[in-house]
Image (cartoon, rainbow, N blue to C red; front, side, top):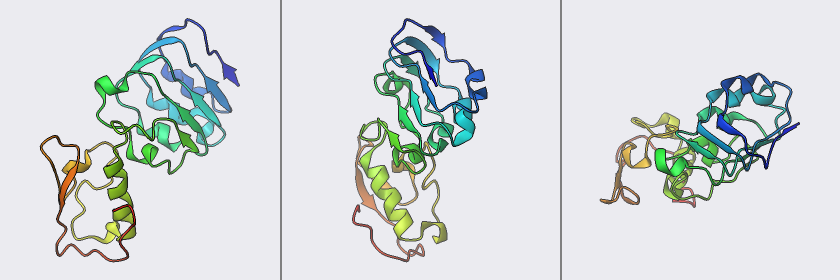
Length: 177
């Protein structure tokens, strides 16, 4: 356990933090840390033993690395940073909580658009991997509005049209659609 929360630590989070391979808890919440999160965070706890990554209430910016979403069984706590200012979305796998136990920003509609999550369910339930053309579907960072067959309204927020005619869909319609 490395708990340095509620201090006045400043600067960037060093990439060497990923070398803490047997760590179960890293809590640096409520500090003055800034900059981008290093992708090496995905190495914490060897990718399997980390239970909690607490980085909330700092000034982190940039893209949330996809590797953070691969911390199996961990709670990922990133609220109250500045990701909204520099990143359009969080990695899809993190928003869907596929590997992690909890992601405290999963309900944030800017970082984890609900329609992107629903379209992901639709892709899975209709055997998307077997589609004739699933261009950009399930890309970790690409907006769902850029996925093949998806047309969004002028604000690029809401799906206005889904056209996957003659695209080899099979399976069932998901309830989320």
